[in-house]
Image (cartoon, rainbow, N blue to C red; front, side, top):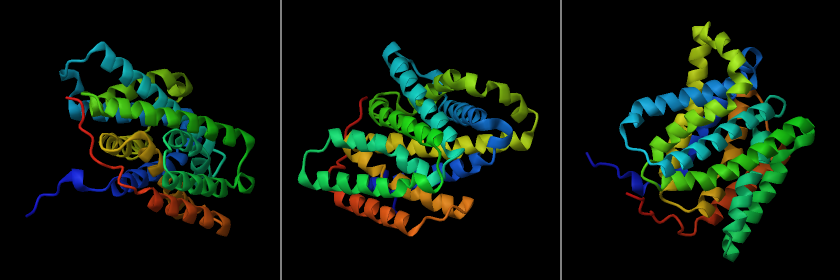
Length: 287
């Protein structure tokens, strides 16, 4: 049997697998808000995911430098804050709409890397699609919108810092250890609700499943993709996220997109196709 070379898999399929896993996890997490609140759910998600990666990778065995720990910690804090903010948003805003607003963060990162007419056109289409998809008047509140915008700012930081960690020697180990630090930072928002999860095995299991689907799978794949493509291309690739979130919201949460939102999805898809300009040449990772 012919062995599949992962480096030959285009980044789009990898991202779609990760995004689908992530937003299925997001949809499941919404069902935990009543008992754990968004803060408790976010803490269980980030902490559980970090422990899974650290245990799988046996990250305590590697030699850590102060610089590696520093970058991993900052990355993990930004990641955890992004998870917390988007949960407070989707508590009151439909999943697809919240992620569409949040996508303004990657749009900002992509804008800084725009150098060609083709990439500028792709960025404009992606931004236009996001504006159409946002549709805050159909199901949002001002609080939800602000949290989505805050999550978008953290998403931008996730892209920049994620590339730093992904191209270092620690990479996936840095993801796991960083999320552990991030979980400690956001713990004040969720620690009062952890005993509720511990006392209910089914609830705890669901929280850990959310961590696996929403963090371990997608962010692990992101680390792989970030080693291969630059920040600009990766940021444009994130335009698939609102599309995936809208699809998952429709299938699992009965949040049907309107005709206008379907137009927005179409614009985003065209932007992704247009952005394929040979920028995904594999990059040699640091030893």
